[in-house]
Image (cartoon, rainbow over all chains, first blue to last red):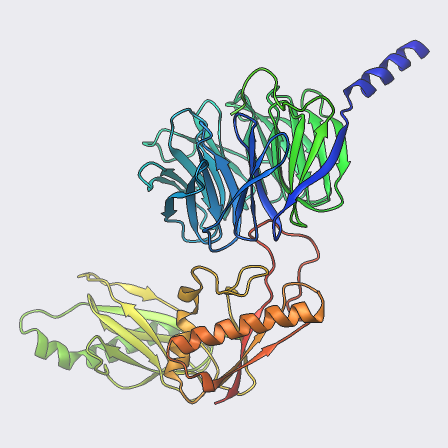
Length: 325
Length: 242
């Protein structure tokens, strides 16, 4: 009996991951979005200070500040080839930036309220960008032409965030109407494929796993739900945090999820068991986060303007054997 | 036949009389379709129905018929207007700010009833008008993108009522130091004053007040809110002279 208990204790202990925290730099105001590029060599952050900053990985050196938006920048997303960055702002525009030069390639107007979510199609060579806005719509843009390709209507309240599936077939959008809608990326289709219900508070974010088989969604009450895709079956619901969860990130193993909250903590979850394998109190509200492919480095965007990293010993390269997105 | 139906018929008859003369002049062979416009006058402060005097003008600025008055009991109004025309409903009542509402009557040959409510602002010194949506982003003192459109209606009201003076009152986004709160409230009030002045409202009519404590009537929420949905300190226009 004692042996069995000891074995269980060892097994539980073995699953815990340990990270060391540090601050790599600061924005002049709250950091609202974080996105790691496919090569795990760069991370972009955006802020209430109306700027976007690019930082190198794994060393965390500030590379460039992108200016041009005239209101807070709510989210950012790298293109599949890492050459471009899309940003969403409360100035109602989506801008596309050349990562190398820092120049604006496109400024796309069409939303009639703050643009909150933005996601570049992860498909190599694709120039499509999805966005969400407080105008209740989801829009698809052609970044090459700088034009709106499609508007998806269905949500009854403001839409909060959006994500492409990594196979490029679907888009997930979430809303204050407490639903998550799944849309086809086929530009000829305008109705949602399905609507996921079950959240009891506004849904703030949605993100696909790298194999496109899972969708993680999080809401204003700190509840995180995992859905099997494309069936839409609910796999797991977790009372992950005590305050709203604005951002989540998958590791490339497709079973490790990291969540950050305004309850000032960052947590890591093993989705196969639902077990919490790491909790770190950051001491400030976490608006956004992203991870390198193996989750060896977690980058945090914080309410005090700091950009922080949590590093796991021995994970300097940040990736294993393949790119995530 | 209930009272409302009777009222409708009487009003339609009156409308037909009102329109009879111009119709006879305009069309020898065809009588234009009369569309019934119904609605309520509502007090901007309470959104309760109110009695108000108003007049209807056509697209040439010519008054259509006599002045009208909405119901004293429930603020209801009913007017017959010609299909395919554009009209202006003008509030002409000393109890309220002069205001105009544009009405496009669709072209139709069938009976049509349109419904529209008209929110009027009482002309009283000391009356407080909340500026919604708040024309600033959280922690920012520059007018937010799109605020110009949101403020257009207030600008129209101020330019149509040159005898009224206002005080712009701005509250901070959160409890903070008095200096920081004063700075952002002052900057916001000045930005709004400059905007009104740029649109033709005399700056001499506008005073400003920067409040350093949060609005007790609309305080910041206890729970944090998602990004983009952050609480922004309320902004009011207080009527100081009518």
